[in-house]
Structures are given as C-alpha cells and as structure tokens.
Image (cartoon, rainbow, N blue to C red; front, side):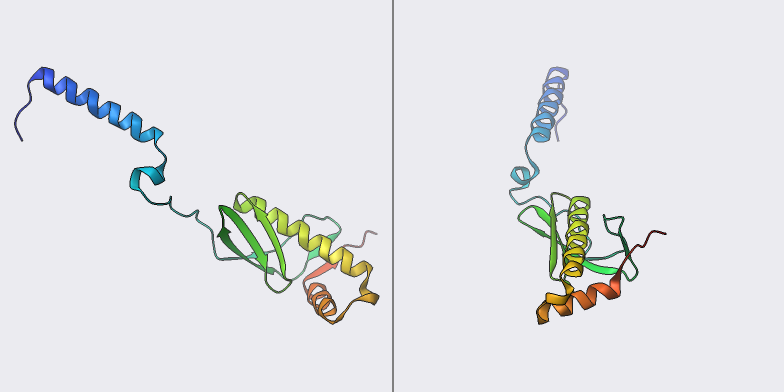
Length: 134
C-alpha cells in the first residue's frame, strides 16, 4: 500500500468518518442485505407465578417462547393458552393474565364444562390453587 501525503491522509480520515456515520444510520438488514439476527428467545421456561394475587402456582407451568411476525409468543401447550408481546416480558405477563382468567372462568362454570374443558380444568387444578385469606 503506497504512503499517503498529509492532505490525502486527512481526506481518507474524513471519508472513513463519514462512512461510519452513514453506516450507523443504515438499518442492520440493509447493511448486510439480510434480516437482522433473531431476538434471543429461550425455548421454554417454567412459570411460577401469575398476575392475580388470588391465585398461587403450586406446580410450575411449562411455557414455550418463540418469535412470530416480529412478536414474542408465549404458549402454555398443556392449557392451549397463548400470550403475545413485543418482547419476552410483555408476552409472559400476557400469558400470566390469560391463564389466571382461564382458571377463574373455569372455576366459576366447573359444573357445566364439556369434556375438553373438564380436562383443562383438571390440569389447572394440579398447577394452581386459589389463595384463601384468613
């Protein structure tokens, strides 16, 4: 590589600085002509609490996390329930609310459930109990 004159060196430095500024403004996917790397989403987690203070988890609930159309999906396969969010925390909070609502609604109508919901209710009762206040 030939040695640069001082004037050329300043021009090269300014051009490189300008290129770095432009690169910082260009989205990653355009820079490398491919989609950005996927969010780091763990495959499974065990849910040990719900968002409702009336309910307590006594057996952890398996939740599967995955990406779908730029959103994080939290799925409780044993319960056929889903939560969605723009990030993991939001999806987990959403599924916590969904499971709590499912428990309370099945508890309320437990004498009028069909076979599928009886099975879901039975599964829920093994994982969650209602907190009784003294």
